[in-house]
Image (cartoon, rainbow, N blue to C red; front, side):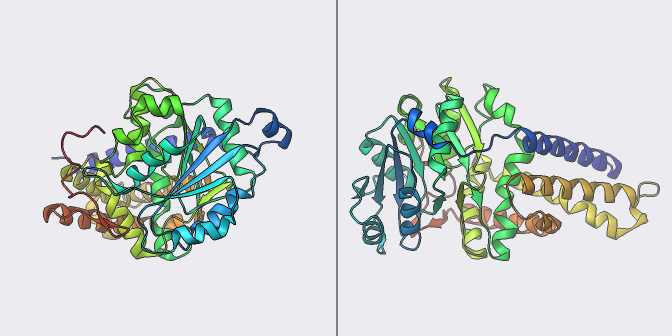
Length: 391
């Protein structure tokens, strides 16, 4: 049993590691930069932009118009309507007004053992005509310079997979409290050098909102067919790229590529509930331990401070204040790196409590053996994907 002093030492070490990692990533994380027009025209290889779309009537039009505004000289867009219950396909056609660069198709029925997005992306990969395959979501916005910037980054890094982390737009308080925690986890835990240079697949991350593959790398890794039952297919694809000795590279969208990931607290709760258990290896115990660890790390010092000197003599109040300051500094540094509101870092304890509630919700779904729903479909039961499927 650890004494309070040992717990405080362990918390200090953990926070110092996170601070060092966040600082390293703040300095070193690659960021997209607009490509010069003459450079785009000279070296721009053709790219297939692949968009799975299910019930995206409110978003698909602006997304397509933003892509078509790009001066990039050689690209095609494939939109796959994945059994939408709204006017996604009709509004996509209206937004593109017969532009020859855009093809809009209906997806085939969802086979047994596949998740919807993975099946849609696999179909799109078979339709694509070019060597570069850019998978992007229907709610991602592209500035005119963005497509050229992504291709330029791909050329410079010679990656098999380049994943870009779009700048996340948050509007409501629920979004502001939850959405930045995704970037927080990336920038505070995974040094970019490990992700790029370490050969271990565990040191890999990716964002499914923007994945750019070379076709050869996509085929070698097995593509979406190899992760057909994974709810965090982006991370598993990145891991497979490393497993096959291919080059993974990451970059920040730097405002050129952006996304409003969720709309309101309820939407964010559903989205995080869908992913949080899978992000912990579908292990309820690991998720529970992770939740308790973060409560202890980011809320424990506040409780210590409020409890007063009864819990410690010489250490109070300086040590709990130090732990609080370190936690807020890590959160602020990751927010600054990702172009998010630095002032929201002061609400970190509330964000951690909300994530704890999401974890409990996911664990309750697991206990009931009833997986979460997303876009009108039941995700596989919470105990994990069907056995025997390659991931």
